[in-house]
Length: 293
Image (cartoon, rainbow, N blue to C red; front, top):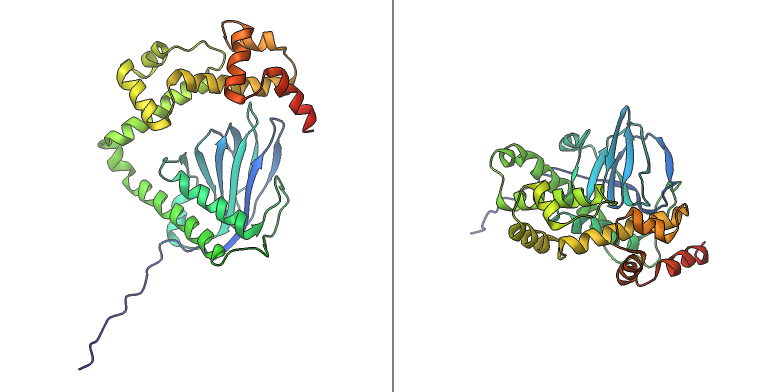
């Protein structure tokens, strides 16, 4: 007797039939893209620094780890904000009903979803010819060396990102009422990061940070170290040095002035910290700017 099996059809919540462009930009603080609109979706994700994003009549600042969706035919423009930003742009076609959840949507990306963004970019770079920093790219060309299944993996990763974000949106109201321990800790870490990044010229102590977020030193330091792999003081120094690099690029201040502005004890300590973090002294870094231009 022949056994009868029922074939169950897949229900695609998000289907991305076409990719338009994939970019990874590294621009200086003068970057200013005047804007455009087009009949497909676009994702912008900030990997480093901050950008100012204008969508129709709304303007917001996106920081590191934040993502925004631009819906079809929505005017959008972007420019650097107070630093030299690195950011991803992924544009694609999608007519699934569920994609409408991303209209006027932006959020701080959950750390568990960041590897998906990285996978999209990594696979796209293996699969397509992607000129660096080309804001005028209009068509992706397949590489001669593209690995088998590369296009499908880009599609799959992009759909996975959207689906995971949809799950977060659907759970948001419940999470707001009964936040999990992990969500609370993630929020705490992001508050600490935000406080440090918004006060680069302040001599920040762990006690200052504890007072700001309202948590004890032991618990705060342990949580921050667990989620970032760094101590609060180390993270603060790294951000100060990132800011120092931008000030050196501008060329309006000498090293002593930069040291004073960023509240280092003295210029010698500033120079030692700069070299420990970057592998170069401030003078060597400044010289490298001219070499690479």
